[in-house]
Image 1: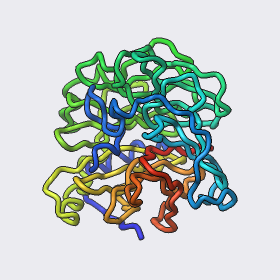
Image 2 (image 1 turned 90 degrees about the horizontal axis):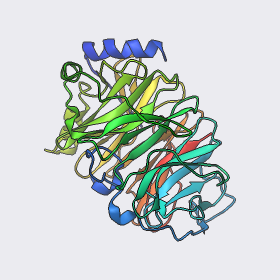
Image 3 (image 1 turned 180 degrees about the horizontal axis):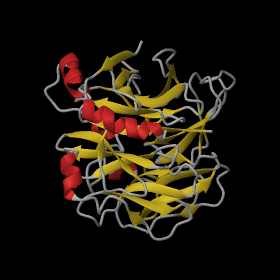
Image 4 (image 1 turned 180 degrees about the vertical axis):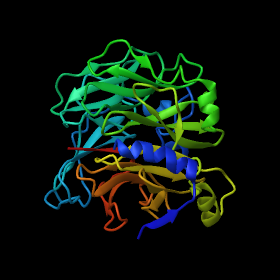
Length: 366
């Protein structure tokens, strides 16, 4: 069962109420490490995909439903450098294995209509960037400018599908949050111009880099992670007026609780923000040195709910289209990392994939 925790954090609650009105294991992440290669997307995982076409699903039974709601779950397979796909009652198949690429390099994200998939990929030896492709595998496009290294991260679609946010690029001294038209063009750096005073007021330091952007369903705000030493927090800015930084997790108290219950002396990494379909709740991961959990933050108040509670690491939440379930990756299996689904109240956990190696960073499609 989930655990609800309420905190008296007046400044945080006041900031969140404004928004509500409008609405380890290092190899697990696709998150903040500045311009260097991020966890879970190491250079050794960039080998060309062998193009495997079919793999067994959750129980090796093609007719057994793997999860309760409609939709498809895309995710990243590190062994294949490939985006894989799981469908309810179907098998797990390769999605990008037949594309004219040297391989995918990180987790996918799905356009609001479910018709296009965005992911970080590699077209040539030194041609890295964000790519998009139709759900039928046609019309592959290289959206971002080409970069010689892979330090460009984690695309996120705008709610109307017209823009894509991402973290990078490597030419910067730090990773920033950028936005580009979904058809390509000149990217816009959203966070470069944020004044130092705004970061100081939020008690955050952007110099270690920003990562993992997530767009609110109303399109007005973008959440992202801010690295700080060995920890990270989640912040949020307005899309059209990004001069004020709002810290969403800094004062929640989950870090002290997590360290006390897990008996860690290390700081906690808060990452992978994901807005619920109605925009009222933010899911995220809180990760210690050996394990991590999925939490839900009510953006209309100060209630924090812990969804997962095991001796393992559960990271990278992705909401089902109807908001009733959450997909994530975990090291609960003996084979590496697999994709799991759980009800948002912490019940009915199901394992979706069973394969050797690591599969990470799920993205649920309409």
